Image (tube, rainbow, N blue to C red; front, side, top):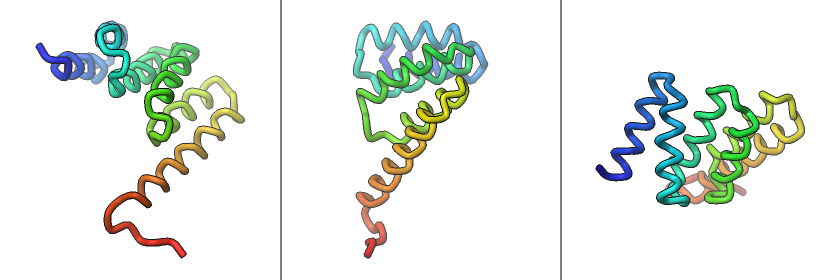
Length: 115
């Protein structure tokens, strides 16, 4: 079974609300390949959905280290921080998500030029 197949199985568990199973599968993938970005990003969200906000934040920051300019990383971290009531950190990550979005749009072919 490929890593993609195993990731798909984890996402199936996630989609059914079986976050514990998804977490187990995602952690196994990351033990094998710590740079597997999609698994890392999904692991943070699985912990969030399970209600473990501290662990969601920790895993979200691991995803941030893998792709610091990824919009979804910062969107997730903003949501995680908002959930624990840390408005300052949530707003920081909202801004980072917007910046990532703008940078991505500017790099896209056919993007309108500013100025």
